[in-house]
Length: 110
Length: 111
Image 1 (cartoon, each protein chain N blue to C red):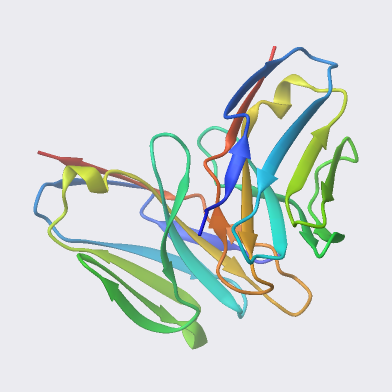
Image 2: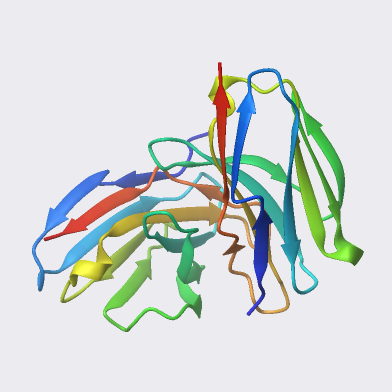
């Protein structure tokens, strides 16, 4: 199956700092999503971004499908940004499950 | 528009018992997928249902089974529970081949 690698595994930030999370995938994909998992376990949708660039407030994401990677940018981080960030991809072509990376755990300190 | 809802939120079962988890999909969605998330790991695909038919299955044993109903809600059934089945179970709904939205999950503990 498709391999999804996220880096770094852990990230500690001072409030106000900027950061970049990376997601590499091993095959072409039909769909790519970024999620933030809250402390209660729910996956919150951040971006649906199979290609291109999107922005939502302090967060933005870029997917370069031809080079098989995606980046999630967090600017002016806040303590509420803490948590685990997951990248998930879907291959399409009769394979419509989401394959997740292992996640990046972000800790933002006041 | 209501989101994806799962029930119950927490559950404790004894090894060997059976359990049923439920998921109501988001209004207008026709596809439901189930995922198992062990502590410290990313979610792993269990199976997917599209218009009441199973449309793909991961690597979990046949003890894990499911259903999708005409209103597109879904159940996950697990028979003969084992200690390793303790995990967060997540349900996602979508329109076919589009953005998936997750419920809050059911945290199952097997003792």
